Each structure stands twice: as structure tokens, then as C-alpha cells.
Image (cartoon, rainbow, N blue to C red; front, side, top):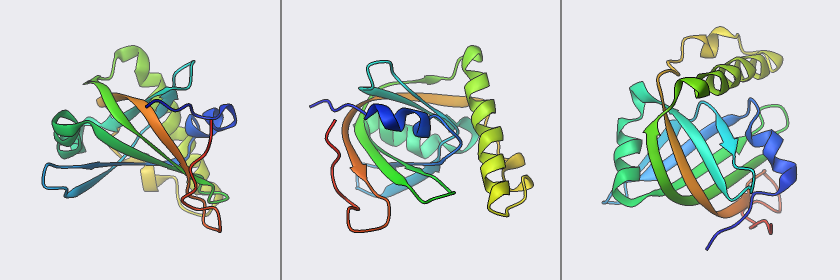
Length: 156
């Protein structure tokens, strides 16, 4: 069952927010990987998240095994946090024309961390390229911002 990412969240997801990608293996052991950029499809029913190729082997193996993915987007500035769940449709090496998306995300994330007092060098040396592009169909979007509505499913 497909869901849609609310229009007002597209800019947030494609900005310099913290992106954490959760997967699990066949024994249900979790794996967390930092995402290094995201793009919402025009119909807002698919999401492509970029994973740093150098450290994403287990996540990619999990996705190839069962396709289940959960991506958390969290604004470092105000703690607005959302989780998007889905089923993987495609895993591939990121294309050269997508490198700008990853580079822009990397720079934006460093700037956001600088605003809250962390040195830009905190992320400067993250190995973000080459990246793996994972596209998935969105099945659920959840509010995860700390507070009384955390865990609430958002209607599209």
C-alpha cells in the first residue's frame, strides 16, 4: 500500500537534515547507516536516499535480502523528526549527475551543525562518494518529533 509524503515535508527531506537509514537482516538484527542526501519523486510516493558506498555494505545486503527500509529525517535546529518507511524498488550506484545532490547535502549538513556549535570538520571527512542510490516506495510516514504526537502516522 503506497503512501504520499506531504508536500510541506519535501523541502525538509531534501535539505541538510540528519538522515539515518534503518534496515534489518534475515535474523531481524538492525543496521543503521547515515544517509548522505535524499530526493523525493515528483508524485511524492517514492524516495531516493543516498548511502555512502564505503560503509553501507550491510545495509545494502539487508535491502537486497528483504527490501524493508526506514529512514529518519531529523532537523538539528528544532528537532522536527519524521520517519518514512517503505519497500525498496531499486538499488544502484549513484550516477555522476547525482553527485551534486550528495555534495550539496554534505555542505548543508556541515553548515547546520556549525549553527549549533559543532565544527564543520565534524562531517568534512565523511566519505560520501561514491554513493549507493536506494529508491523505495513510501508505505508510511510517521511523526517522530519528541512530544505527544510522536509515533503518529501522518495522513497524506
